[in-house]
Amino acid sequence: MNITHVPRRFVKSHWGGTETVILETCKRLMRMGHTPHILCPNALAKESQEVIEGVQILREPYFYPYFGLSKESKRLLDLKGGNLFSFSIMKALMKEPKLDLIHLHTAKRLGGIGRYVAQKRKIPYVLSLHGGLFDVPAEEAATWTEPTRNAIEWGKLLGWWVGSRSVPDDAAAIICVGEEEKVQTQSRYPNKKVVHLPNGVDPERFSQGDGKAFRHKFGIPSDACVILTMGRIDPQKNQLFLLQALPELMNINPKTHCLIIGPVTNQEYNDRILDFIEKRGLKKVVTVIAGLDAGSRALTDAFHSADIFALPSVHEPFGIVILEAWASGLPVIASRVGGIPSFVVPGQDGLLFESNKEESFVEAFRIMIDHPETATKMAEAGRKKAASQYSWDSVTSRLVKIYEEALSENPFRK
Image 1: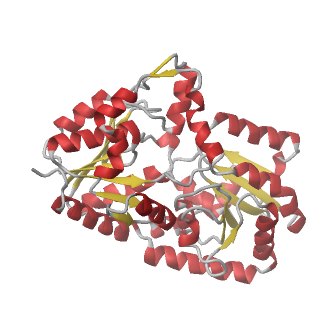
Image 2: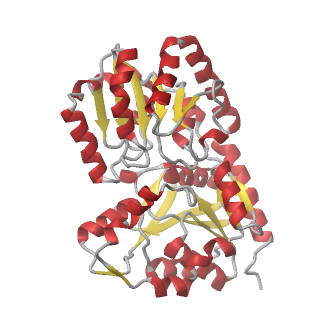
Image 3: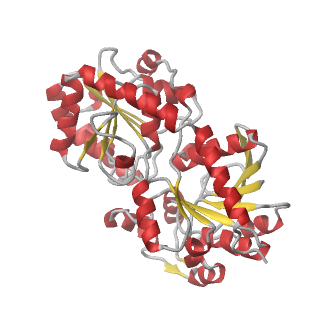
C-alpha cells in the first residue's frame, strides 16, 4: 500500500505524541513492505524535505485565512496547530502517484483537503483523533483561537468547499487512541466505524539509559528523589500544578527534585512557570529543559535519571509518555482524565489522582515514598504491560488491518 499521512506539522523541534505515533508506525509499515510518507504544512520547519529514520517528510506552504493576523499571532497558531489551509498540499495529494489511502491526523480545513482529494481520486481515508476532540476543557479550547481574536476570518468558504465539517462523516474509519474518546465518538457517529487503537512504545529502546550521566550534565544531585514530567510546556500538561505541590512533596521527602522536560508550545505559560520558580526560590530543586530530540539518547537517559514519573495533565486522550516511563522501569502517578484510566490500573501498575486536586496527588506521592516495595512492584508490572501489550509492532499490525478494511469498503469507490 502507498499511504500518505497528513498531520498539522511534523518537526523535531516541537515533537509530541502524534509525531511519535506517525514516525514509529511508518517505520514499521516500511518493514512490512508498504510505502508510507508524511505530507504536512511547513509550520515551524526550515526544510521543505527531510528524511527522519528512513521516513520521508514533505512540507508545503500554507496560510491562515484571516485578515489582520499579525506575525506573532501566526507563530502562536503554528505552535498550537491552528486551522490553516494549503493549496500546495491539495496539489501534492492530487499528483501523488499510485496513492492508495490517505491517513489524516487532523480534521478542520486541513482534514477537509484530505477528504476533498480522496473523494476526487476515489480512494478512502481514515482519520485519527490524537488531541481530544470532545473532552478538551473550555478554558483551554479558548486559548486555541485567542491569536485570531482581533482578526477577521474569511476561510469559512474554503472549509465549505473542501467539506471540512464532513471529515468524520466520510472517513472509512475513525481511529481513537483512548477508550473514552472512542465511546464519545461512537455516540456522535453511531453509523461510523470507530476503532480504538492505542499508542505504542519501543520497549527495547527505553529499557536502557544512563541516568547518572544525565543528572551530572544538568546539575541534579545524585541523591535527589527526582520526579519527572515530560510533555509540551502548555496548560494542557499542567506542569505548574506539579510546582505548586512541590513544597508538600518536599515535606514528605526533603530531597525531592522536580524535572520538567518538553518543547515550549505556549510561551506565556512557560514564562509563568519560570516566574513561579524564581519567586518561590525553587531554582535549586527544579530543572526545566525546553525539549530534547525525540530520537536522542538524552531522552531515554532522562527517564532513567528519575525515580517517579508524573503526568498531571488536565486532559489526555491517551498519554504515550506513560508507556515510555513504564518501559524505562519507572513507577507512574497520573491524573484520572481522558484515556489514562483505560490502561493504567490503580494500585497494580500505577496510581491515579483527581485532576488538579493537590491533596490527591500528594497522597499518591506519599504512597510511592513510604512504600518503595509497592512502587517497585507497580513499576515492574508497568514494564511488563508495555512490552506485552503496547509494542509498536503490534499496534502497526492492527493499523494495517484497518487500512485493508478501508480499502475493501471504500466509500468513494465508483
